[in-house]
Image (tube, rainbow, N blue to C red; front, side, top):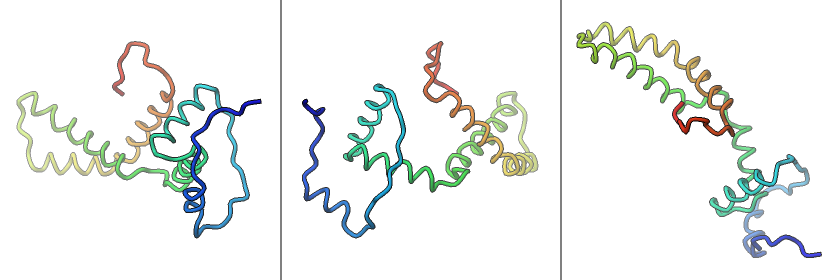
Length: 137
């Protein structure tokens, strides 16, 4: 009855991690496939954490995150503005200051909805391999 080999964390490090925090007496479990477990263990290893510690940190970070990621929303807003600006420029049209103001107003009004839609697309595609090798969204 040999237990699977695991990275052994020295007791000093384990004690230092728990210093100053309340004791943990609850569990949050999830069933995963063998491949998913390997993927999770690799992610934890890259962060220099045990799977348990990495999982807890990841779950809590996601639970505490607001419904709208501000950086992602602003990235989508920038993309929207660029797409709207590139088209008239590519067609050789002049872009007036009032047009830019209107475009910025539209982006401010629509960016949250657009970011939610893009994130939903990524969430639906998560874990699926692209069939044509295209990794662009």
